[in-house]
Image 1 (cartoon, each protein chain N blue to C red):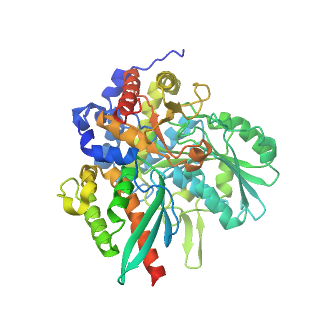
Image 2 (cartoon, one colour):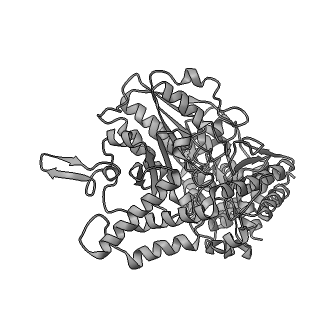
Image 3 (cartoon, chains in turn red, cyan):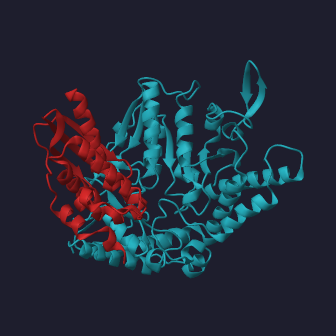
Length: 151
Length: 416
């Protein structure tokens, strides 16, 4: 069975005990993203702070309804980006996107992606890639909006 | 218990797809016919033969192939008409059921005797597939008419208690599914049509999930329009049907325009052919029509009563088997009365995507998500569901495989 290659323990752990879940104040931008195929949805808030003239992700909070992959991915994403400079978080986000588009052939950089490498198996299932990307896309959108507000 | 006169083993032998294996070399257990059916060799042969032997543009040309193509296409129309107990000139070929609904919704907003105006009402239901919902929202936006809808009961039946007041003197059309693609519910379409007609409203039934699965006689059903798609009834993609009562089609302006549907074209303007040609612009889909006719012939040979009885027996089995699993909730009626073979359900603590993924690993193909019926899911208080749907080739062993697969998913996610 290949089921375990998709549903790694890390994913199931994050699914059962999602990190940073729940909407929090204050925030600079809030977005609502939906996967129109299945109806999965996420409302996500981003709060940025200025550290020596560089924007840093202070907090990411979210409320979501969805499958194990989308829930776990949002949880892993929040772990990865909170506390990081936006530019660095965007690099991680890009690396995750490339991993998801790799059709199972990607060799993830564990130093960069940490727990998110567990999603490598998901990239073999085209129908589930959007699930894994839902939270990340929402974060990217909210962060872009927060940056605009800051400017 | 309904007696079943269907030799499922010999039916299965006609479907090449059912012989293949899927993930982990498992045999395919195809429980997604509500989305699209598999196709028997008879249909595939008809499509191939149309291309190999009779390929030409129908209704054009003076050559033999052109004549044969025209015969195939018009023969398909006759076959479909007799399947529905309709007249051939009441059968319009469209791309699919969705296009057929759009055709009617467009005709009702264009200038003409049927035009819907501001202040008029359009009545639909909460259990519609988006295909029989969004075009009516758009019609109302274009015309200023008011969209109203019948709600569903917690059991997933259509609430028709207020039918008499929901259909008013201002209602111009009632659009209702003839069988829900989620709950399998078969609403009382004949009764709805009777009340609608008393008040002067037209009735369109979405037969995408009924025509493939039960005998449908348009006169007995009492509707003005019926739409369905070939690909859900063993036929090819890309062709569907709009049945419309002759005098209504006659009163409707064209939808898509171009060649084939005109009478005279001058630079200043054009006149149009009578129905059904008025609604069929461009070179017709000969091979698809031939495939649809072969599908109808196949179903007719099985007997639609037998098809319905076979599915009823599978559905009864599925309802029993799923009811026995702790943590599984069936959406929709839990008996086969006025209910077809779409069985949607929720598994406590396991998202439908994850249920579907585990089933797929076992070779079982189901649908997950909202099945293009988002408002219905909302009304039933769920975000999404898993749906098994049955057809002529499914077996009782496959129903058992589904139940075992659900239990496996529960164990995998630690909820069962």
